[in-house]
Amino acid sequence: MSGAQTWRQWVTDPSPSSRRQARLGQWWLAWLRIKRNNLAMAGLVIVGILLFAAAFAPWIAPHDPLVQDLSRRLLPPGTPGNWLGTDDFGRDILSRIIYGSRITLYIIGLVAVTAPVLGLLIGTVAGYFGGWVDAVLMRLTDIFLAFPRLILALALVAVLGPGIENAVLAIALTAWPPYARVARAETLTVRKSDYIAAIRLQGAGPVRIIAGHIVPMCLPSVIIRVTLDMAGVILIAAGLGFLGLGVQPPLPEWGLMISTGRKYLFEQWWVATMPGLAIFIVSLGFNLLGDGLRDVLDPRSAAR
Image 1 (cartoon, one colour):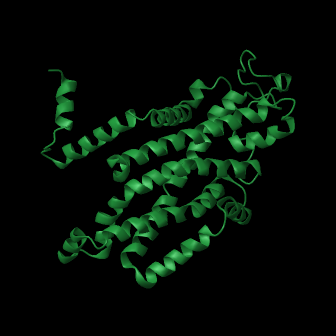
Image 2 (cartoon, helix red, strand yellow):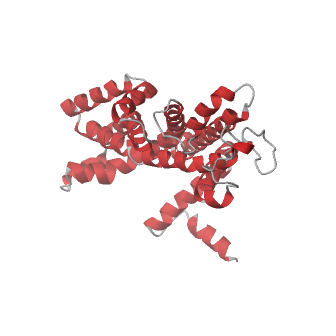
Image 3 (spheres, one colour):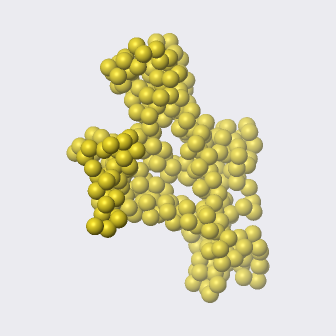
């Protein structure tokens, strides 16, 4: 029997001998369910390409994204050496899209580690304590939800000033309310459970109960929501860049590239179309991956 077969039998053992073995078995079964979902695998491939492009941009980009060559400005796609064409300053569009993936991933990463954490904290505290704490925190959440995310982000960036850090802060401050709602709903379903009562009888305080037992129960739903929300984050970041309130020139941000290319849209369509296609494909990839993770991590979907 090969080592791979032995490992597979160990990880799929119906009677695991340790918590580590049980957890690895759950992850393995989740991976098998994702593999059976063709759309989820397509989304995973797209996200993987984004990660690869961001990590190895200096080696796979054919040109420096900031170097201008006016003798090669507005070359069409298919030109040798500039396969997606050049912009109005003669910069290679393919190289700028590849380096732009780094900025996109940077924004996604910062938002993903700030907004969900804030929303998870507010939602679990509101759901666990209830009463006036729940009322105050949820009314605060409702105030943020009452404003369209892009409009609120525009207002915050207008106050804070343009720039990538302020754009990330504005997006994070507008993205946390849905996570708070999801975490509160999950907390309300488990706070009266017998095991929570048993933990409380053992002397555990609210902080230990929330951090050690309620938050892990909320994580699958939050992870699904994060993956599905990444497309919206990309679009808001691109919208801020398009309006000149996000990433500033000459950095190769996809929304900013569309903004600079819109005046050539009818004659030199590729200047704005290529970064637009990048936004579309990456957003689609996150949506497909999010749908697949929902089927895997949601026990009600898995039961069906």
